[in-house]
Length: 234
Image (cartoon, rainbow, N blue to C red; front, side, top):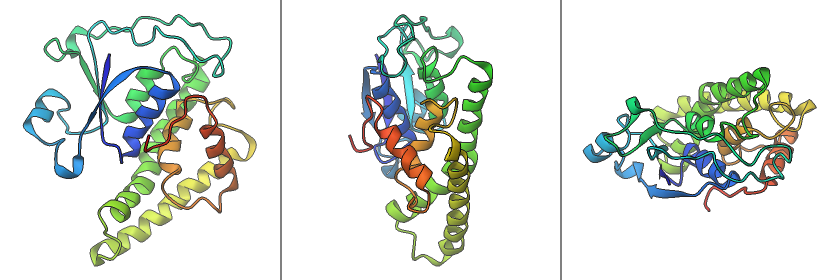
């Protein structure tokens, strides 16, 4: 069984929990409190993630994570028998399994050979495009500001004021990009639900106000209607 090292308040960790639920994949969850420094201990750095990050999953050697039933409501034409996935000998952790960090990399791994990662080359590349954009233009602004204000209580500290204004500006620019893209489509790629939507949903639904972004608001509702959807605090 997969093991997920997780921090419940992190949108990046939530992406992984959400996808695992959508795909109905069982896993073991290990809570890591990053505010208490639990991801920076020698034990964590040596045995889980050398860069001290969550989410991280540990994939047991020989694990057949894609051999599972597919929810027909996601794609009724897809096969229920998926290709076997095995850990590479070069990436094993002393026989304990393969460790994989970075939320969007984990999404890609988990969605291989499922309808949530298109096999069409152009659509596949477009999913990757949105995953890269999310980490470069979306998450660093919306997620960072949420962390500063909601969890570190930095909104009144003078050294943060200019940085907060800049993050707000860049965050709303990102939401404008999403709003424009969604004017003519229901989802971000191929007009169907993919891991691009999973990735972008995580921080969009709990970050900035979206009242001025009706298309984004409608898209959030469509994501929440997907079978297997779970809330961030589930």
